[in-house]
Picture: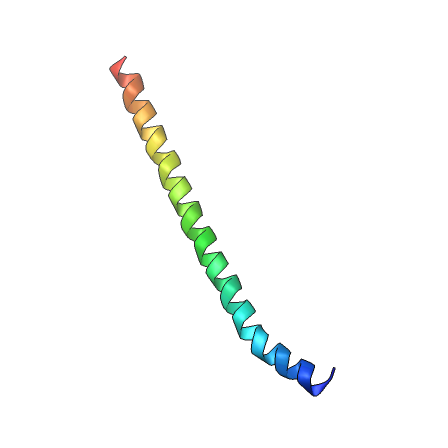
Length: 52
């Protein structure tokens, strides 16, 4: 690896790490939103079943 390549790697690594962390956080938020929606559907379906 040349010095130029090492410098490029050192410059890009933090950016990639930050992007991976952001993607992980976004995935967690989306998972929580889907889980909350599924839980709410279950509650509403239960209430609808009681009303029949």
